[in-house]
Length: 218
Ligand SMILES: C[S@@+](CC[C@H](N)C(=O)[O-])C[C@H]1O[C@@H](n2cnc3c(N)ncnc32)[C@H](O)[C@@H]1O
Image 1 (cartoon, rainbow, N blue to C red):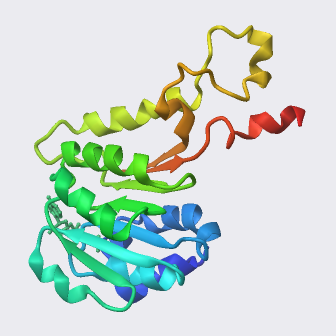
Image 2: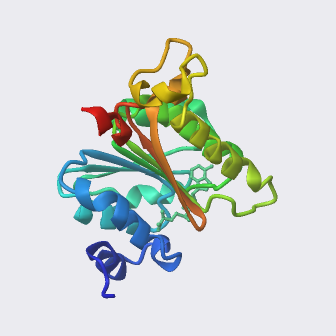
């Protein structure tokens, strides 16, 4: 199989995600929304290569990068905005969201510390629009912390996606087109989660509205 267009851009710009072979998964999740995406944030700028790739891939998007290293400011250019700060600070995340949000896509390729990954997920998922996509790179890869922690948290989203109302008769499950009041925010707002080796995509959306089973009886 030949290279997909995003892999071709990966060859042109050389972001680290190219070496991890993540671009085939990004292509799968991003190819249909290429023209619709208006704002993207990537945590972890490094040499600015992934931001340049996203700028070319999403022609209508403002591309934001957050990095601890002040030298990254040099990568600011047309449609590329750089924010300097520690992703472990709530205040920093708030500032970035105030300036560039809400973000259709957030990619966490920063410190890779589990507590930072969970913090960024919790912070942005609430603030992103429905149909937003949150991506965690290098998930489950150790840096002296509990590697399984973030894996397990994101695996737990499956139970929210497949929310089950125990008050409903089992034959009535196709009618579970609306969740009751006591269903929690994650039950109602996570439409999907996809794992590939060391990368995870979380799709925000109206659950069960974005669930195709709803259409069985329509
Ligand atoms: C793997 S590199 C990013 C690579 C880039 N996204 C690409 O695809 O080419 C990780 C970056 O995260 C930054 N970083 C590390 N800890 C951070 C933190 N606590 N807050 C913000 N950025 C951090 C580093 O300075 C480094 O530039």
